[in-house]
Image (cartoon, rainbow, N blue to C red; front, side, top):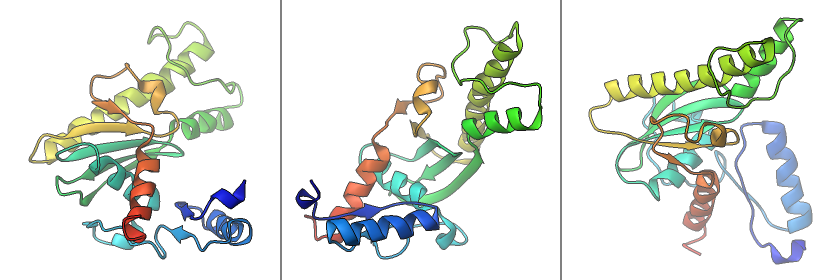
Length: 205
């Protein structure tokens, strides 16, 4: 199986994971991997005060989004953290917002209050919960919708041009259809960005 693979590209914000994945690529794929933030040229302008602080995943998403969607963008990535990144019309990374992820918030709620159970995240049919589980699900789900809509509104008020909003990430599908503030759901954003970075670093191959 490994013999059909001839390249590897790694994007991670966990140093230990990068170490392990690099060793895997060398030992089993017999290739030197491209690593975002180390030996991969991104070809993107990073217009923040300390460009080295921009997370690899956020830059990869910026490239993946700019390939498909025209004009300035807001890219929302729902994972361990929920990030809101602004991509200029020329594809440059302009900065953004980092908030705790929805799963992290649910776990914190359970861990900090002994009487609150661990519950599944899902879209409640009503905002006002009639029991503890319903109230928690509503608070987390609709609370995140409010966070997303509120931050989109505030970001748009600071940006001089209309912005298109793209959502991606592990739990983005939960919000599909729940908010008119999100223009597109794109689960392939990160993979598309990684493929494009590999192409840029391999002479277009």
